[in-house]
Length: 533
Image 1 (cartoon, one colour):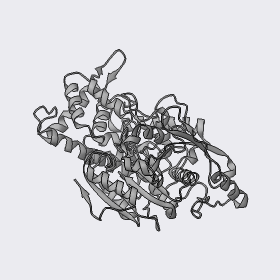
Image 2 (tube, helix red, strand yellow):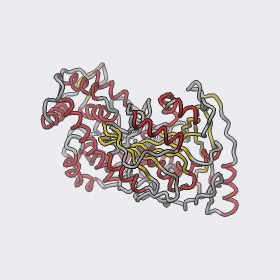
Image 3 (cartoon, helix red, strand yellow):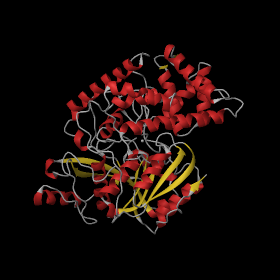
Image 4 (cartoon, one colour):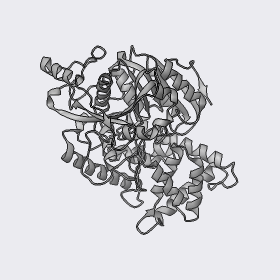
């Protein structure tokens, strides 16, 4: 599931399933930290909300509310609506619909918002139901993802399931978080020229403060209700309206957090659930961000070690030499940006964004070409990597911020003073990327709505088996987080992919793809301890 010179959980897959977090932008783009934060893309046990959370009701019915008989009746009406499917305007062969959902599930009389969804009908006879998909984020359009990625799913999966994608509330084609700023929340481009560390963090703090003020001014009434638990409740409503007794689901990056939250809220309704490139919901946002910084460092060193074996390596023959080369190129571009066209210039932050994208996908051959080009004054390949990695619009950036800041796992709220004090830890974990990730520690400090989803383990007691996939050198959601989530879940089973890049399914590993498809089609888990190389 990134943020300004930052991160954010990285989104998950792009045009083909799970390649990493969700959407993109111009060269002044945001880094997906959880995520990637967004990864900054970035679950919990019946998380406490601003209003009490409804308890799961029997399968197929609406959850109870604390608002009495009238409120319960109102919520049943939502679960009783009929979806009107129509051909999608923007995607041939797909159907689209909208459903009304309560702004506040605890008080459904407070009004509606709209959630949009799309589906690709199954192509076979032995239909198992619907497979809901979420590619990560937060802030990424799941609908846009499915329109691009549907054919990446095997013919067997497409034959057995309607592939379904819902844009979470606040995101994409659903009722949208639009703060009216007319620009992305944050850019890879630093808000100030190179400065001492404390001054740079202060500048980010000021920028995030302004964005929070604009969001409060434009969409204050929506902001408390776009968190992950409410999105999970919307998923359950869609499950019911689709006629599915249980939720079948594949979530990537931040989508694992959403899926784990669903499992905790509705364990009896879990069907075949796959969580790929997992977040550890028990981590606080500072530790999540620190893990991500370290993850990108590990990925950079793997890239550099591979590069050193090639005759045309643009970063040298040793890890220290590669680090020096990257740092030097970044410093040179900060002092003297490359001019590409009349109005566009390429800075050190743009270089960092391209490297992050190249490591996340991964696209090592293209990254080598881009670094070679920058060394000779040509940023064309670098800009192409950034353009391909662009995943979210300015509204997606704002949605990412709004969703992230409601979670204690993915929305850091450190003061500028505490963020500056944490910088040495980040530089120790990641000399090449630590500073960029540390800048995001203030992203939710001034957010007008408090965090509503605490960092704590998710157990989903009573849920059917859940398959968790972890990739050993995943930079955006480092492998230990998948290990941790699989251990927390009472019915979790870990599948390990030895490799590089963000997420494991549809990454060219036949072992992983076959194991996931068997689970989706037959409910058969891979043996405990399975490692795919």
